[in-house]
Length: 179
Image 1 (cartoon, rainbow, N blue to C red):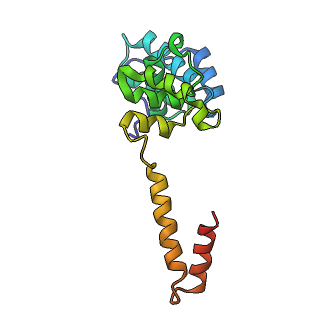
Image 2: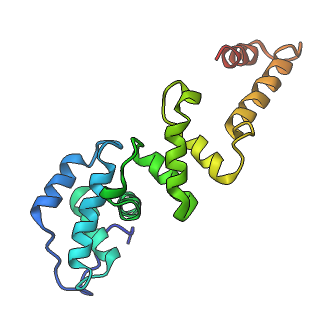
Image 3: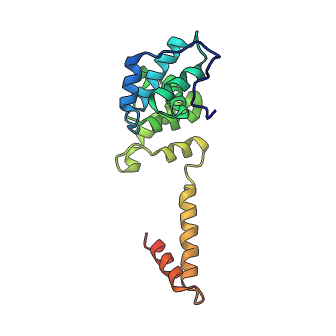
């Protein structure tokens, strides 16, 4: 069992409602623009059936019928349940809201900050990595990817001047340094 297949024999046959399933199928492969809608549809079906079937079973059945990974459904449901439509008042993306949720009950402080600090990000809402850094308390530090990139380019610069380095390796390092 891969985790997506519905369990046979343990529960009575589950027939999911056609309308939300059809809508989920239509938006299944849209990236993030419909992420909250996916979560809201899952919540509707799970809450309507949770007294008869376990949540994981319903989610598994939704996954099988729509082709959306179970983990994706779980994530969309969690964020949508944590931030219901009436609280989605900021112009944040689904992923920015999810990043804010790492702060627990204080998520809204970070959502407001992401909007308030748009001037620091060329008029854009603070990126997910920045929101996560605020929450973890590492905002003033250089992001880890940037530290790694700088270390990589520094190493590439020292290697490219090595006379023993083969020409093809120097060529690849040259490409890296041109990025």
